[in-house]
Image (cartoon, rainbow, N blue to C red; front, side, top):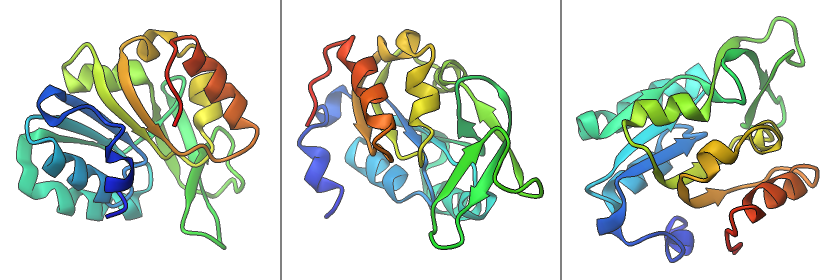
Length: 176
């Protein structure tokens, strides 16, 4: 039900081949996309190993239509740290981490994710990445933004909103 509220802004099902789901969590959005767009392949990206395990299980029935990546979308390939918020179920990533003993994860670029999709364009990019929008939209993002048709994004801070808006405005994305 919740996913249908923004479905009206997405392309028609028969025109969607490639979806990248950043912040896939346990796979509810990934599975929704796979069912809604039966001809599409989804690259599902989730850095938290505790979420990645159920994501893998939930996506098993879809076989080769889904590619699972246990990493965090980032501006460069790097080693990052998971930041587990005690008061929330949200997990963010950073270069240094809030705790030097927090688990490490891999940072992966949008260019590499596009290679994994084996497509030159992204039909739908879903982003729920707990504040990493600044890292992705604040740096060199034009190469992949110019090849992205639709973005469904949750912006996590007032600081990130103008960065995302400026980047997407260069390509005249309408905002809803």
